Amino acid sequence: MEEITLANKVADCEAEVVNNPIPQKYQNLQTAPSEYSAYLTSKARRKLLFTKASFFEHGEWDPSGKLELENIVGEGAFGKVYKGRHLETNETVAIKVLDDKTNTEKEINNEIQLLKKYSKHENIASFFGVYLQPMGNLWIAMEYCGGGTVKDIMENTITGTLPEHWIAYIIREVLKALKYLHNNRVVHNDVKGHNIALTEDASVRLIDFGISQKLKGLRGACKDPVGTPHWLAPEVWTCSEDDTESYGCKCDLWSLGITAIEMAEGRDPLANLDGLLAGIKRCDPPTLRIPSKWSTEFNSFLGLCLKKDPKVTHSAKQLLKHPFVRNLENVKMVRAEMQAVICRVRAAKSKKVDVKPKEQPEKISTGDFEKAMAELKSFQRGNKSDANAENLNAEAKKDATDSKELASQAEIDSANAEEPASVDKKEVSDALSNDEEKVTECNIETSDATEPVSQAKDSSDEELFFDALERLSISDFTPKTEITATAANTGAQAIKILEAVSESKEGAKRDGKAKEVIYNQMALFYFVRFALFLSEFLIWFSETIKK
Ligand SMILES: Nc1ncnc2c1ncn2[C@@H]1O[C@H](COP(=O)(O)OP(=O)(O)OP(=O)(O)O)[C@@H](O)[C@H]1O
Image (tube, rainbow, N blue to C red):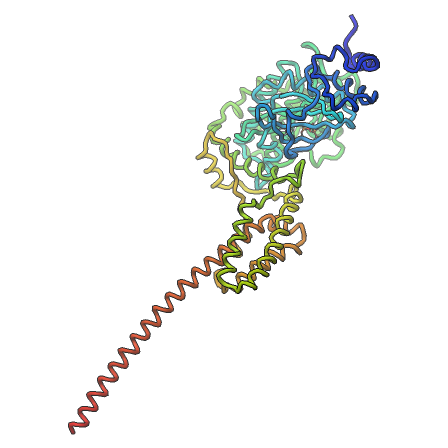
């Protein structure tokens, strides 16, 4: 029987395309919609479509009406990853869009096949479907991991590293996924912080099967040296030099050890090593830089992952029994702590450039903006003549509109300029109090917001009003980098300033009342003194007359 290889399938498709508009053997795919008939008449295009269609047996023709793209959440070597929606079920999904210019069809096919078959494990992002977009892009829909990757989490802590009990939890979950994959003779080949993702409730998922390999039978081994250089096991390096060498599943456990150090120290242990290949061969396996800072269990666990000889490296099954991961206490607490940082990651991701930037909700909500304008108007009504108020109102409206635009621009610019932030105790306790529930809100405090309020305290209403207007217009001329934080908050600031204005007005009212009381008391005092003086005068006058 003729072997069904990729080349055979492609040749087969090409032959059929010449004679039939839609080959019989692909009738199990959804029929191409009529609106694409013009597109399909181009032989070259048709060839491309059927070639790609041959990669998967249960793919669908067109994602429109089924999937909707929202914002970009990540970018990889093969294309962009979007947060999206599965319209039928209304489920949030991640959609990897692989453009047809990328000449990596073998990898794409590989990723789809492995995802379809092996993503049913609880620690692997599950597969939803694959779609062929009319212009030739492939869309791979999978479970959405809203907590970002381990790398994202690290970038959102103040030290850029993770505490040991978080590392133990993440490693344990990845080990479960690896145990399942290795039992099925699948080598992931690219375990690293960038490819470990978290859901919003801090469950761990292994992602990216782009270079994973399915081994043939029990004796099968990998020959291609693939992976990310600093995470590559020594046996994979050896393959790159010597064609006769091969490697197996254990390479994932070396990469996992490197990932554990990456989480503990904020970067991989070989980051500064020159001549990587020679260095790996010459040096002892990497360890934590200051082993005494960490538990004996953590150090010993790493020692079992990072062996130069894969034969003595422990398997995922064995490593799951190690005290470093076996003795993990209070997972609920660990997850609650992590959810606090996930909030920051989500906030940062929601600021990323959108598919349709102009239609995106802006950071300053319309409600906030209208509230600011209403307060501004009511302030003007109370303090200025109508003519003046109208002028100022128009000016403020223009400034605020500009600020809204700047805020939206700043959102785009700030996507990659996020400052690492600390794990706030309040956030942790909020996450804890929510316990099993999703943390749905994240309040990022802005130091700027308090400034106008404190300034407002010693200023007159009039000064405050002009100060508010000035601040709104100054944001127009501030360089973009500086306004990254401030412009996005200008609407909120306007509200704060106006709140301060009205607070100050209230204060002025209270002052007026106090003055009234003082005047009344002073009047009483002078009246009494006058009465005393009058009575003394009368006494003196009557005595003088008597004399
Ligand atoms: N299921 C998912 N949910 C949420 N975000 C995801 C998901 N899958 C991928 N991402 C995001 O997209 C990024 C790129 O995805 P992925 O690693 O699969 O692409 P890739 O092209 O194979 O990248 P590379 O080869 O550079 O690792 C990830 O680092 C992550 O930020």
